[in-house]
Length: 150
Image (cartoon, rainbow, N blue to C red; front, top):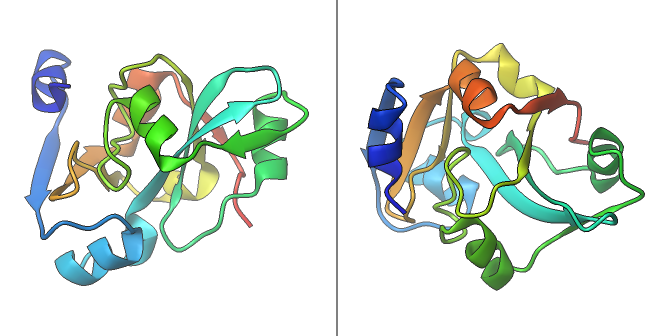
């Protein structure tokens, strides 16, 4: 997937940050010095209705599947295993950005993320982070803002 090409085509501000290969947000935070709460976890899930969604939460929080199901108008939500998540998003876990996925899916951003002008997410590979304006993620993905953490 051509993440940089997509961002240039959409004419959005972004910054790529190189780092050693990491999968988990805590490791990415340690390697880059970016505070953990500023790096997002991008979790691919499937609802009880069969819909796919991406849950975007601060790296220092845990997702509440109950709250996520409510935000997605579903009875429940299940996170996909890494292999399926990569198939759906087009990116490896640890490199999944908040925008431009192989499969179109609903995107839900945790409300805590709107406290920051920018967010840091996977940069398309495990060797980089992508900084985007939070408002651009919401606009490009028509994202829903909801309280989905505990």
